[in-house]
Image (cartoon, rainbow, N blue to C red; front, side, top):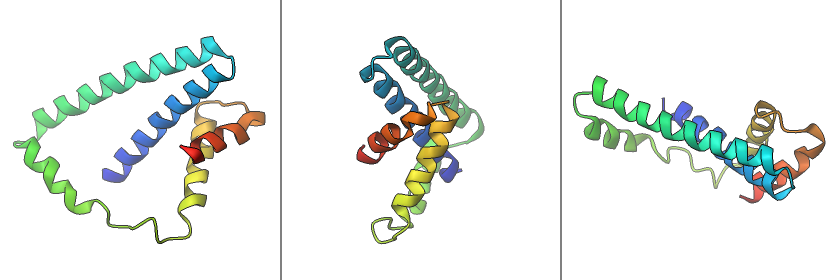
Length: 114
């Protein structure tokens, strides 16, 4: 669940970055539309996740803090494959958001710098 949650936030963060990149690149209507859509979806999904935790878990705060034991189990600063993995995930996210293939280098540069 933690891994899927991390991927979820990664892909939504990517959508924010793509929206900003499109706004900067002059595609104002597409960028603003994507940015607003992702903002609304993120808000609704956060409310849904919070409400779901309240409905299904007797003590959501305790369950939340118990997950801390799973954080930082891999020190990504010491492994060589962290940047290729990040770029591979970035390519998948660009494809998911139907980013123009000719502009992938821009999207990857922005994501890697961010």
